[in-house]
Length: 236
Image (cartoon, rainbow, N blue to C red):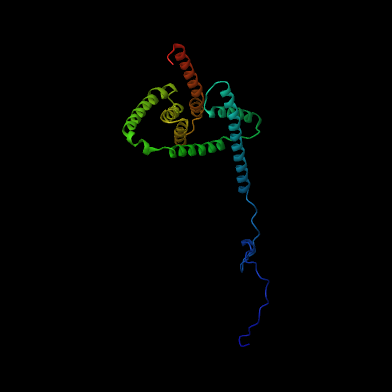
């Protein structure tokens, strides 16, 4: 009574978990919820395209198993990934013509880079260096000799024979990685070079084709021919 206080009418209880856009502060107009941005649609379409490319790679791997079994039945001993490469080449050319799976190169490159990094990490994890401790000095000497020989072959042969241009330099880098490791190392070396100096599409066609495909046919032919010759001469 003294201060003329009056009770205020009770308002409806406010939901404790009301969304932020439903809360209006004093003196501020109530804002309508923001419309959905096109970024969400772009993200969903990108995820869908990535899934399509992963499915295409899985299909190539499945058909590649069948192709590899056909090679084995024909008497050819080749790595299992050769069949997958043949199937992938057929699928890619058909998709470029009919656009069924809509394969995108940058997404294929992303999946390939992830697979390459996983392969390198798993290969390093399986090394048992402590078992080779007593061979450290001979292995180090062999490694130095191999690096020197590969460097000379890259500079004097690979770079010069491939044309003495940027593409040939990237091919020489891939040759260096291939001679010191596997085709995965060659791809990693070329990837580092192209990220720094620019794309080299011809190098990325030649080196994987030779290092992971043609060399297996050549090795199988040479080994089979040599074995037949030795058997014919009675040396085996």
